[in-house]
Image 1 (cartoon, rainbow, N blue to C red):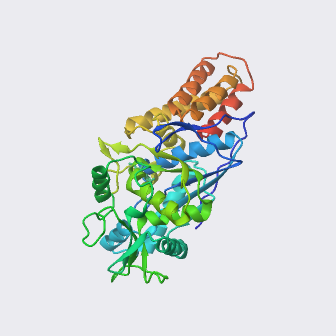
Image 2: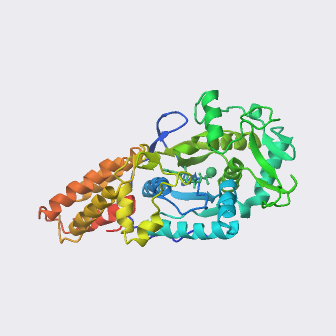
Image 3: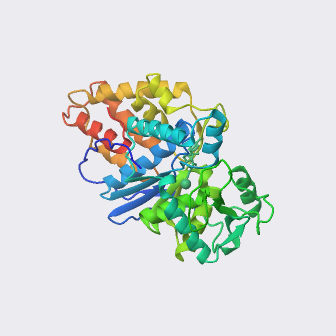
Amino acid sequence: MRSWSAPDIVRLPGSGGPLRIHDTVTGGRRATTPGPTARMYVCGITPYDAAHIGHAFTYLTFDLVNRVWRDAGHAVDYVQNTTDVDDPLLERAEATGEAWRDLAAREIQVFREDMEALRVLPPRAYVGVVESIDLIAEFVDRLRAAGAAYDLEGDIYFAVEAADRFGEIGGMDRDEMLRLFGERGGDPDRPGKKDPLDWLLWRAERPGEPSWDSPLGRGRPGWHVECSAISLHELGMGFDLNGGGSDLVFPHHEMGAAEACKATGSHPHAQNYMHVGMVGLDGEKMSKSLGNLVFVSKLREEGADPMAVRLAMLPNHYRTDWGWTPKGLEEAGERLARWRSAAARDSGPDAAPVLAEVRRALADDLDTPAALAAVDAWAEQANAGTGDDPAAPALVRDTVDALLGVEL
Ligand code: 5CA
Ligand code: ZN
């Protein structure tokens, strides 16, 4: 489906270094090692509601990865899905009496506008499930042919015993996997399964639910299989980075990796796995089911400067859980004003060290607090009238624009 439009990317002098990130699988810091084109897949929204700040924080994080890779001289092939048919979307449509397709289309459009306003670079391929039914069904068929799937009353399940390295992404014990599977859309208690952790690949048609013809019979895809099928189709195996929020480590990325490896007979699904901390409100994870949401679109409607919204997220390191506060947005607005006034001056202190420090900080597992501190220090001096380099304000403006995505 249509992606969204790209902001201009300013070219900076020189180039940045290789990006090191915390990899979920190894639990340690690792250099990403893309070829000329870095390949990244990020799990997109389930469009039954507008995007909240938690979603935005996840896409902002991978936007920084995108920007750091580009600055290091790579092209970036970025793919994102959108779960435009799944239980939560159908349940919401049922509850409000809206057609599920209309609900999805509307919220996807709001999401595009949010992403544009926040200056998030668009994916090369923005892919919905509905437009991918054939390739997903074909993928499930490959899993059947590989002996990894079985039929349960017309539904098709992946047999966890067929997975060679199950547990490698999250490194969790079985009890924890069972608990999270139950909490996050799984069905550990369904009678007739060979193992409680077996997961749904294809759901046979039910009355009143959307379904499509396929070699598997009429039905619709399970959740995890959409991302493994789409990522394989668009990027192939062994792509550079698979990502999403930390709530996707298990079961979603674990089960997706097991499917992709089984279907292709190769390993790994992705070279690195990166997961973003959960954004909360009033001490609880922001989630559509809890209803404690701060919507990006609502903030925009209320007149918040999207660049202040972006800047309100950046002081938080991507791996830590944090809470959104109105005060955080206010402080971001003040910081934005300080940076804008410094960047509008005729001169300031030499900015080459600012560029170097922002590059260093972001390449070091996206250390945004250190990157902001470098710009803060320069802006404070420039605003105090220190420094006489006439090229400095423009270089700081370009640095902040290209690497942090904030337009001054
Ligand atoms: N459609 C699936 C992925 S295939 C999904 O998880 N959709 S979602 O709408 O629930 O979430 C979209 C993305 O935002 C996912 O990467 C998810 O991990 C992330 N996310 C969800 N809630 C939060 C939160 N509170 N903080 C940070 N990231 C979040
Ligand atoms: Zn996904």
